Length: 544
Image (cartoon, helix red, strand yellow):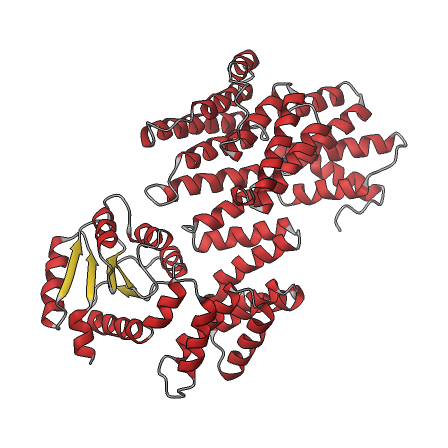
């Protein structure tokens, strides 16, 4: 029976090196595999998958033309050009941790490291083909999104105690229970599996069921344990990030997602979540670095689109507006222009001129060229009120606010929020929360970040401490990662305190916490030391 399965199996080999193709063809045919197809690059592979349904795809990761193996497999899965019944084996000469972790997140059936013998490949192929053949009906039900019937079929197969695929069947059942949102049943199921054997996937499944079931304390405890093991660290970080979002602990969520991204940087959806969380935390530098990563990893992938370049440019402007380092501002401005240039090259026929005009207006504003900025904004078609891009509309609302059109900004914020609430699929809850946060802050604080900081410094130098304190407090609200503002605010808090006014200890501690974690310039460090000495003299404890 196995020989018949192997001879009839349709196998696609994706390999760009002619010598490697020839070697694999001769070797696999010599081992009894008859229906072999070959593709030199990802485009050819996708074309063949559109025409024919393969039993197995053996794909080299190191494809240099257009997409690499990772991007190809991701697109095949997302577009459903391959089914669950199709086996997929990666082969790669590269074994860096970030690559391996990224690939394994896509859950291929196997990963084979070059160099390998043809018998290594034969054993891996036969193992995958046999499993896919014996469980074909189950995979077909899952492909048809008929999870209830898949569970019944799995239970029937599990009645055979000698079934060699019991562990795989159990995992498929657990995944199906989670997809059906049968959370209580899933929790009991994963616990029963773990009583038999400590499968890693069962621990992960149990945590997912606990989170869905709002049993956050137990989920948190299990995830903390999973962090200690290398094989579960990535998924634990990812789930901890999602759990902290659910608990509205966005600083912790950012930390966990940042660590997960370092391990497996090619997961674009996780990168987008990190971007949204960092925005909500006012960490515009982190958002900028994340959007740069997205632009880099998205190129040629299924995620590659004009928004990738536009969002990287927007993130650069947001960051530049919240930093007071001139060289950094100039560098970000050049990079932003480069992203717009790349956009025009990659997507010459895309209609993004309005969004580009808004970006250029914000660039003029960044360079203190306010008249040029207003001229660009004023020439926009105000009769066009349809929101085609939430990101683009949000950028326009920011531009309105920065240039003093506060009423227009608030009207557009209302329109964006209503659009997101009516169409939940266009933005995740974290991003919607950020948009709402932006509306509130920009309603309360009329000045843009640059003007606000300049105004605060001017009033401080004039000795108008109360006015300066209010301005620095507002600046710190919208730029809580800016060490210069934190230092000025802390100094202002102590100066007003010396005049007999009440001291905001909670705000002072926030400033202190940020400054204590930063590498300050010499002048800033000296000022900070003086403030700490002043606090000690007044018996004010800044560290919590």
